[in-house]
Length: 170
Length: 210
Image 1 (cartoon, each protein chain N blue to C red):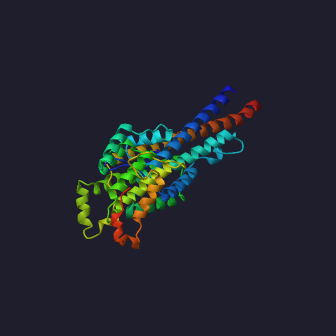
Image 2: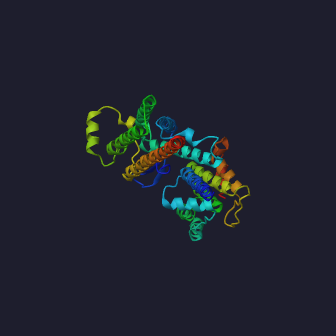
Image 3: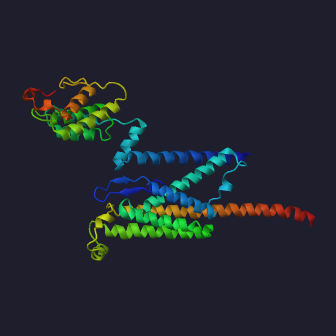
């Protein structure tokens, strides 16, 4: 009787361990971490303990305000290596917008990357409207930023309107 | 085993590259499972049945699924990742496994055959081909270059991986074959026990008659 119970416990424990290990393998192949650092980041995200590096984020924000957009993105990349923070991704998208904005034309490549970043921000904000209260910005929601970036990617006859040179960057 | 079968290490960046098992490896694993059943290494009729408690049945089915995916990853570790070589290797594996379906096998012969099959594929992919496509260049590259002068080597294109990938593949295959050997011992042990029990059950009444 005792032996039967023991064998049942061993079977159950074995099943539990192998199922957990299978889930780990599937998760690993789905997230495809490239380094041990990425692996720990992904694990933190999965466990819900992921936090951005606030110091790096603030440093990126300072650079952003000084219009050093590429340097700002480098800092934000280090602040949010797993790209899991909606606010940081919003700022990354905004930096692409500001860097790509031109009085006569928009840099299509930068705007495309901006759309990707703002889409990440929208996905991460999970249903709620992402609003950033920053007086230095003229667009405070991810939806506004996305619309502006997408408009910049569209081609139309209004692009040749000379009055467009009078438009202002947001 | 299932974890390491699809793991490669990038040559330049040293980054992990996880390659999910391609569809053809699932087909190869299915053929291999049929062989394992035919060779008596996996005895489904002794594993699953209405006589066993549900938990035992679930545990045995789970072992079966685990062997299936371990086999798929074993093939994944020795198959070239893309190009003509991927299909050539797949074809030779299919050919061998299909032929084996019609040969007479026991567990020991099957294990020997599988060890040779995976060993050959390992040597071809991780030693010969890796040497052929190594960025530094090798004697094999020079020989191949001379032999196939004029033929587009792009057809045989293979992504460069770090040397450690070969070590990982070797460890993976060693683990897989060792697992199968242990499994064969376990199956034989069970068979011996069953046979012993049957013999003692048969001898019991005879002893009483004597």
